[in-house]
Length: 393
Ligand SMILES: *Cc1c(COP(=O)(O)O)cnc(C)c1O
Image (cartoon, rainbow, N blue to C red; front, top):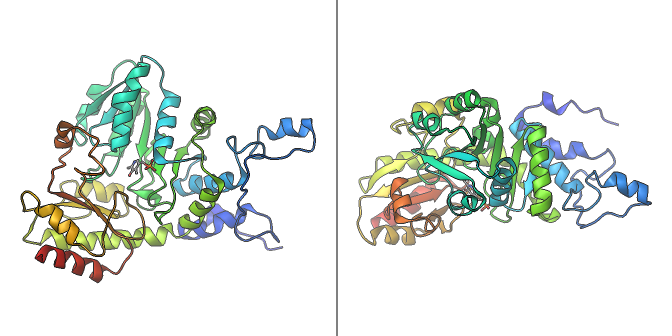
């Protein structure tokens, strides 16, 4: 039998590929099997009693396929533990509900994923939990918003769609001094570009529908953090029930193996497109954290290893011209997602942020001229040529 080096001694790229195989035994399949089952048969009642505390009892409680993928994600973020969910929103809502009770208070940045914003403003108040929103990049405001019953500082970085960066070192310092938990939605950064736990964040949340799975073919969420916190969230998830189907978990594991390759290519493509757009006469403004002229460039460089695959820009146009440019694109699919291998385009006002009020959108800097590009892994020359022909039209 081969004696493998410990996973922790290997580089990220190697772990991404090897981690799933390590979970099995030798002479077993190289790729972990899909336990496509809702339940597990026990030999007797005593064995079932023991199994009820394991991942071989009933799939809402756990499943070996889920265990394998959760280990992979925990390793990626340098965490003790991880938990998978049926979607990013399932991860976000379950994690928040775990830590708050009636009378508690949350401090949150104003630029936040639309679904999270709705949950905090429309649903949590029904359970007596209030949220104060602060200007995302006015870092002194967060501490001022903290009250005696503040339980959670809820963050997202970079933000969607204007790519604002939150200063994690500063936020963790504020949270620690006030004994407040810190959660971050790190979907856009991915573990390749940012490891929030290294900065002292308590819990990392992902819409794994995006970069982690990477192929726009499944829905998945993840919560990654310390053992104790994850155990609490696990109990909540057990009742709320937002778990993944085993087959989708297996697809997620396949996607994760190429995460490093994909995200690096997306970083590179997005930076080149941002540079192309920044010098284009028809473009008014480009939002991309790794552009040297970006206002938060220094912070982005300090905190992140790459700028990510998402960027947005505003055209020098009025009325319907933005729609016309978007519709003239041939390679960019008009779709409201991101993180896949294929490039996508959307106008957030009409799609991803349509659920917000006009006032909320204005506060986030989202205009009808703002176009969001989710960059894939295609050849950069083809993507730029496509943008160029759309602008010419
Ligand atoms: C897509 C997304 C979510 C929601 O994830 P789903 O998998 O669609 O439920 C949350 N946060 C961010 C930043 C996202 O992009």
